[in-house]
Image (cartoon, rainbow, N blue to C red; front, side, top):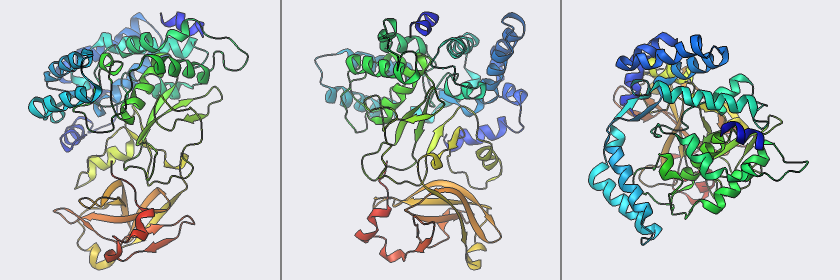
Length: 451
């Protein structure tokens, strides 16, 4: 099927465990973190050394295993019961999408509210056959699909190879499920001189199929646990933009289209999404969507929007975040597999903000945090990144401009403000704001929405 298609067209607990499992770099440390599942991972490496003797596949397997301790799944098998119940609810056509959503929310609150607190590293549960199947299928697509040939090997590792796109995603046969559901157009592609066998052309085929078969009814409210199995994703009758953006990334990858998921740590000011997909064109350009499968690919990405940060969901561990995890005295729950891509979207600036000596004496850690002002009475500040203290100044890189910020530090007990609020203006200048004026409507334009 794959070749026919190609030629046709973490919580704090997680961070603590990772700190131990990745006490040193390298493949061996990752294998040690697998515990009793080590033999499964070693058999994958052995397969590409002795059976399928492909050096690139071996490197792909090593990449997945070496970075695997950053990735985790549900550890409580109650998730199977929840997904079974969800499947029955979504199959009941007598229920409206609102009723289906509310039924799943009710059962979540009743039985499954604590499931996200019970996770296990993928390295301890993943099976060799599952991993090799993902490697073989993605590698065949990279080497045979015309719309994936623009990828370098390193790009292939992030844009096509990974067996999951977000944490807690079910370790299921999503590549087969989604291409079967959304890939009908690939069997009989429309041939023309412009889009035939191109990434954008194939992506549009996927989007067209999704438009006709995905029962999409937007209900942008909480709907119980996210439905992260491929079987349920194609049957979900409701959801929010992140749900459908994830479906887009997985659907594109299932057809061999290079795709990644980008996100903001705070909500936008207006209509932009908090998560969206990006594909790589045949010319090596990163083409952003405005949000999910319903929007045009490669259009203008909300030119009127501004934000503090944009992060890319990666498979590889971010070494700066790993160093933070190992050395910080206070651990904010940053995901390890994130890459800062803010400068691809917004005008950015580096910050070096002086901190008063009297305040510095209260701080017990070299790491400091920058928070974006958000429109919320309960939690008016949202941490978006960490930085370090250098010579009495708090240093941060690639911060989005035209945003209201405040810097926080760890006093040995909790995070406290260590700077006055300030606006980072378009010209990269800083304007300090009196704390007692933060509720002024005149400052709303510098604030973001909550998620």
